[in-house]
Length: 551
Image 1 (tube, rainbow, N blue to C red):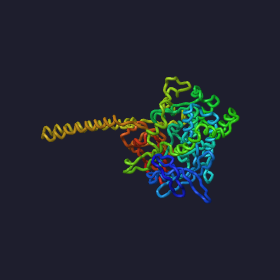
Image 2 (tube, rainbow, N blue to C red):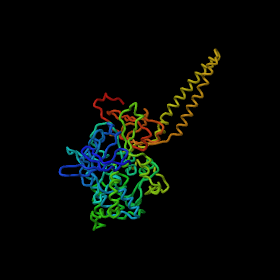
Image 3 (cartoon, rainbow, N blue to C red):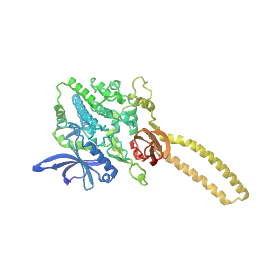
Image 4 (cartoon, one colour):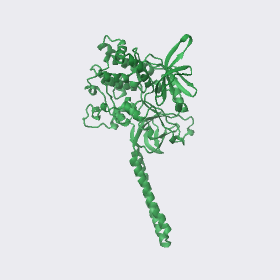
């Protein structure tokens, strides 16, 4: 990061550049008032190549309109969305402290656990913020159904004064969309996804509680819950993992009194978890004061002061505020196919995949698949994705995962057979004609013409074979609002409806994606290898005139 010179920025004065991410730059800033009034805050300045993207700015504006109304002691306050010249920015509360990831790393460095009463208190405070957001209502009293969708250690901040705040509600998804665009967007860190997220199924406030449960598991044990060598492996691990008290039995770092509560938070099915953040918060508070009757919030402040020291406190805020732009998958998919779309980036990433893997994957934290099998199943038996889908949603058994290459191969098999038969008839006919011509009027030129076609066909087949061998496979998840849209790939009906996971996509190909639902406009998009391991959410517009769109 180059040297930064403090400078004015609109009505603010930027004093320090905290971090530079893939989407924005984060600054510590001041704002001034009368009689020497000053206020410290954080400025997230959107990078210039995103500021020129109208769809991205529309999304940013909608999110700011939503989160600016979230005013709670346990949520990082967003003050303003503005523009200085061509630069869009968000001003927000500056928290002087560390995030949960840094707290966990410090515990490893000191070779001591984070005090359990501190863990329970932090979790309880996060639940207060989540409960407020989950129950937030609009101006007319209508529920907004806000889900954070990215509860992770990087987004849980603890201040040196003992405060706990949940950050980055900017990627929250409200059921009431503020912008009626065809942009599909679904974001979040794969490592902290709940099973329903991993399957691309509908989510609710209990999804946030599952993610919080992962954070607590990692903070107490000092190791990752879900790991893998790729995003696909992590997603499969999440899909096939059933966590209960038996799973936590051998985790000696987790106190026995906390295991039933943590297991309930991490229940595979949403209906088996706490119904709300408020219910979880009440249970955490009971455990806190039943087991640590002399606890006060000052314990958190004292722990941070002791662990980080004054010198580190001066240095930490810069690193902590960098979490406002932590790596996560973020997809912007155009609603219509454009001639130039193939040359444009289909995915907006806050950080390259390699950096994301450095952040989330550690060899020593790897959990073997056998550890995920519990209950009546044999230890050596495998849990198939089909059975997990059935357990996730017993009432609605939708095929959620499919190998696209296999589907397209099977679908085109009959066509190839028909074409082969037609080709055979055509070849036989041409052979007879050729022999007739040779008999009646044999010419050297006609012989040469036929011979030239053979090596060309062989060369094309050889190139296709080599290309297929060199190509790597990837997957994407496809969901829609409303659900049940038929999925077409390169014009072929896959026989699937949303939500579904498309696997076996070839990295050397570009796929035209279309979603069709009765009485709704057709949704179009493009899938390229840049979308590997991500999720696509499409919003289908209802037709005002049925004649506007034909299936």
